[in-house]
Length: 318
Image 1 (tube, rainbow, N blue to C red):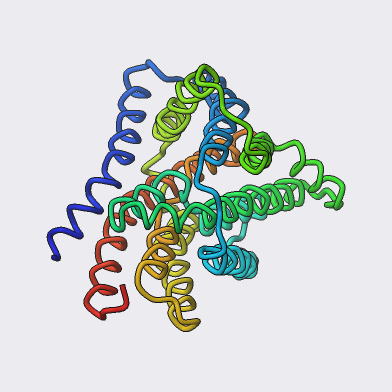
Image 2 (image 1 turned 90 degrees about the horizontal axis):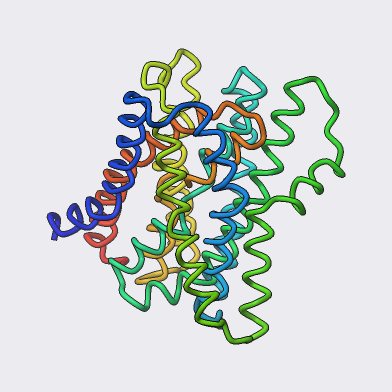
């Protein structure tokens, strides 16, 4: 059993780590430079990731009342984690412009890809069906809250006042949020998806995460990863240790057991989403710090996923 859980975590997590390392290699060989990264990141942020989110939701499972409590808990727990990290950032992160990156790295999980992969490998179709509505709710929250914290952090760090209009403008014009909302609208319209459009969307969506991870890898600075500020280290620890522990314990205390509890754990312990790097760079933040957090959490989640799943199975609650 123990070896099976390690093999499961290894098979899902290591490919992301290898793509990050490939990005580093391409940067060293000169095939990926800052100019390429800038253009590729804009392509991912404005087209590829919105397309991936649209088709993932539009062609997903219909939500049902059976997984509504799971989705509600995921949404509430995400907001609570976000607020706690905002408070921690005020005390822990000295540079105001890095606070939003710290918060985003700590709460923004890769539920769209790694989460569904975890749930599918661990629980099959039941895991995917239970996680579909949880995914839609949390991914929308991830993007909305990321816009809020990055806008407050980056503009506040320049000494500018933060108005509600600025935050709302960032939300309603964010390509990732537009892709999600459009996907939900299409799903509930029950309109047929033409095969040609679906195939085209599949091709475009397929390049989103590999390209985003390559750009993140090319932007990594291992020497600066654990600077004296420790921002990357603390944000990564929040993402793969503290937030999953709080969300899983809260779900257990509220009575979740079996597959639902397992889905909550697996979704909450995924690495920081690759979209966090793209959004940080697009909004003028410290993209290197965001890339470092992705790298650390990708490696760290391999350990916490396997250990956590083994512990939950040993206790008999999953």
